Image (cartoon, rainbow over all chains, first blue to last red; front, top):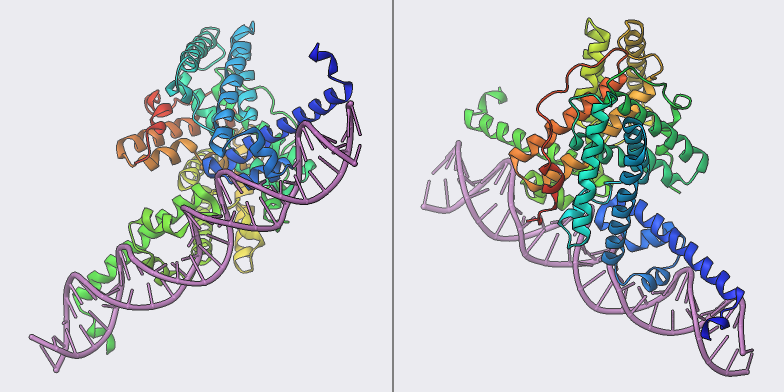
Length: 224
Length: 224
DNA sequence: TTAGTGCGGAGCAATTTGCTCCGCACACTG
DNA sequence: CAGTGTGCGGAGCAAATTGCTCCGCACTAA
């Protein structure tokens, strides 16, 4: 059979290709989130550490890459809502959902629920997830965790709002891993503050140590 | 004296010029906030409803316009911190400061405190204001309004984070005033949620009616 | 050696950029 | 009615940037 010709070496090669591909998608999401739909393909390829040839062998055009990212983003949202819905404590599930979605960058490529206006069956699936999300919000209200006057739309807008972070985006560009981690941690505190604002009851503690003052100034070092 | 030659007509003309100038600055701030330092001068002039000639008669280059905006932004911050410091209730003063600064767009052109790294005397003035701001935060802690584990840097980062709003920016572009007002109101709720998270005590009510679901979808109408 | 595979990036036509500069509209003067 | 001063819009230009193609290279398997 033909399949028996596949050597171990070929498999290793395919694995490397797959890793390459993932780096490309991850970089593309970051750059598109930062620069919008008009991000340059050069910037994306460079951020992924690959050549343009590699990019264009996988995606026929910049638009195709963008649309692929939209689909992946939608899939992540579907999965995250399902996970949250399965959590025994709806309020905890909702909090986890917000944190995970903000850090993934939901709503940075396009407003959440955008795909509702895309061709079915994606659209149908998306709207089903919307209903699940609203049901989760209702249960979080009912269990007394989520403050009563906050709507599902409020939360979607909040995720969108926190997804783009000038702090994280600008510091990522400096390319220093330690600083990037600090910036992410600082944003985690902001998320926690916002979640505290969503809660009906008094706070939980803020995560991690307070952010350093240098986060405000580091971004103004000359771009390398 | 020479001044007596100035006619009423000339004064009216100067007033119109001034109005024009302000429209330019306002538009420039919006566009720079949205597109970053690489916003095009065309986009700025168009957004202000003026020709390129008008722009370049006032500012020698795009960079000069940008720097002017930075200075203005710094002045606004100085004034706002002073006002907040004068408020009899430090916690209320701080809340007002956050709301005002977010809606002005503090930190959207550059991180807050950026000007500390600019030439004096601007730098000296800026660092003096920093101290005032930190003192205000301390007093807000002491009076029991602000939760204890939130730092001044947390708040600066929060202002920066909320200043850029994909919702408001994208909906503004549609050019429908009613919708824009709704988007702004929706963001006000997010600000209130965040302020609730900053508070040591239970919430105040969220302002305005809940945001409509169409805020999530309206942005996807074709760009005119 | 030969064939196959995936890669980086120089190069290309087309668009966009920052900026200049000219002609126009308008009110006032002689 | 010219003449003059002033502020304006936007066509136009050189230069930079864009999306995308395509060729030569490194490496493996036979």
